[in-house]
Structures are given as C-alpha cells and as structure tokens.
Image (tube, rainbow, N blue to C red; front, side, top):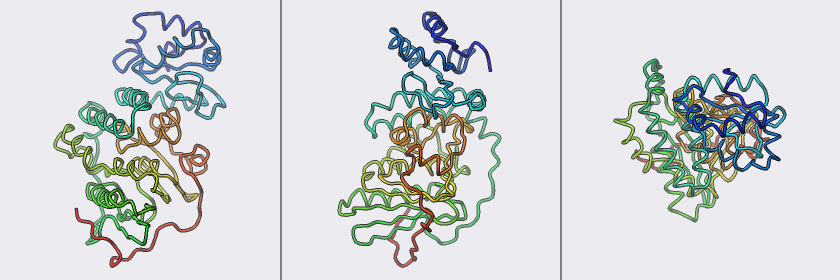
Amino acid sequence: MVADARIEDIDDLRRCAATPVARQDYSPLGPFLFLAVAQAALTQLAGASDGEWLNGWLARLPCPVIGVMPGAGNVFSDAACDVVVSSEAELVGIAANIAHAPLAAAALVQILRTTASLPVGDALTVESLAYATLQAGPEFRGWLAGFRSPDRPATGDVPPVLAERSGDRLTIVLNRPARRNALSVEVRDALCEALELAVADPSIRTVSISGAGRCFSVGGDLVEFGTAPDPATAHAVRTIRMPARLLAECADRAEFRLHGACIGAGVELPAFGRRVVARANSFFQLPEITFGLIPGAGGCVSLPRRIGQQRTAYLALSARRISAVTALRWGLIDMLADQPISPRITRRSTLPISL
C-alpha cells in the first residue's frame, strides 16, 4: 500500500484537508485510489473542534475513505468513513479490489453517500444510472473480454418461478435449481409478474419468497452479462422490469427464507424484506467489484437500510463471504432456522406466469 494514502493522526488530516490539490489526488484518476485513516486519527477526530469541517472534507473525496479501526466490528460512526476494516489484512484485501476496479469503487461509495437520504424509488434510479455508466466503462469491458461463458444446464419445460396463492398468503419460489437460481431475464420477468400480483392485491398479507434446490440464488446470470443492446436501454428496462422496485412496494409484507449461496441479487433482494430467515448453511457475498461493477439489483439501497453504509461498503469492496451467524449479528437476516425451507408446490397449484 502507498504510504501517502494513509492518514496517521489528526494533524496529518488537517494538513491534507488544507491542501487545495489533495482532493483531486485522491480519486480513481489520481495517484491515490483511496484514503486510509488510522485509528489514532479517527479517535482524535471524534472530539476535534474542527471535526465537522474535516468530516465534510472526507465525505466529499471522490474515492473510498477507509477507516482502520481494530475491534470496531466494521463500524465506526464518529467519522466520515465509507468502510471500516478491523485489521491490516482486511485493508490489503480491499485495497487490492479498489486497485482492480477504481472507477467502480469510487462509484460505489458515491452512490451510498448520495442515496442515504433519498426515497427508495429515487435511490434505485440513481443506482441503476451508476450501474449503466459502469457497464460502459473499461473495467467491466475488461472483465467481459476475459469471461468464458460456461455451458448452462437445460431447464426443460419448467416455469422459472412458481407461485401459489393460499388465502392471504402468496408463496413464490425461484425455480431454476440446476442453474442455482441465477437471476436470468426469464427468472427476473417471472418474479416481477408474481410480485406485481402482490402489489396489486393488498388482501395478500404475506409474500413468502424462497429458492428451490441447493441454494437461494447465486445472483445475476453471468452468461447474460453484457448482452443488453446498450447501457442506456438496460437502464430503461430496469426502470420498468426490476424486482427491487416491486419489492419496495410490498416490503412490509415480504418474507424471505434463504439457504446456501446468497450472492449478488441473492442477498440484495432479500434485504428489502420485512423478515428474513436463513438456514445455518447460508452465506452472503457481493462480488460485483470483481466485474468492475457495483451491486445493481437494488443492493446499494436495500443493504444500507438494513446494515448501514459502512458494512454495505465492506461487503461490496471486499467481495468477501460472510456466514449466516455474521449476517444475523449484523442484522442482514432476522433469524436462523435449520428446518427445510423450500415449499412443496406442484405444477397444478402454480399461478400462470407468462414471460
């Protein structure tokens, strides 16, 4: 790590903030792709008379601000840090991901800062616009150029999403187990149609969502990444066919039951739910930084509202998996449950969901 990218004490921070060119130096286009602030500076900042000015300067930097705070549990609310790490090892891992995709890393923290005070619908629009911008950027294009599309198992004549109405309860099951319930276009559209029913019918008091097979969902279908005609059209599609927008409208009735891999959209969508129950074998991950992207299924909006901006940024910038136990401690899930969770729904009991 570059030594000049670290602030060791409050005097270092004051000198840096008073230097006119410093702000442009700390950016994805400058010599320093992030700014790390050591524990000593953070604790001094909390009681500094000029703390408001210094925090304002940190919050305006066009790059991630990383607090190094051992024992803080990835949260330190007394300073304007985008992400908090508990060890040098965590800092090294996040720094490597930022170096790999500095444009995506900068966009992520700027989106999290901006959307914190916005209504959910407006925040989702901002997220989608940023995601579209990155889709046209060099980091995602570089990943796409090196991606080798795997063979996808055939699905047969099976609906991508199962839905059953029973009284005031609507049960929805992602039904692509052979593809680990990847959120392909067909799954996305079918999920939207099921959620549209919930939004349109307030007599449905509970919307229960789970996944068939070994896991809830591994997120977006990588085979379809980059297949939209262009990023602008992709954004337009997201404004009308985005499960997150519908989930936000029925969030107070939505319950998720998770197991196995919950990756990308597989954690972003459940974070909208009123209640999230996960089996002990569940794990959670936001890998988008490795593609040169940010979470784009609503995660920049849903996760901060559940676990805060700093832990959301930690998940997104580290791309690390966290266990169900950690997710429970953070509030990402509400309960651990070891019982089988996939409802048994027969073809005859499903609602007709056209694509």
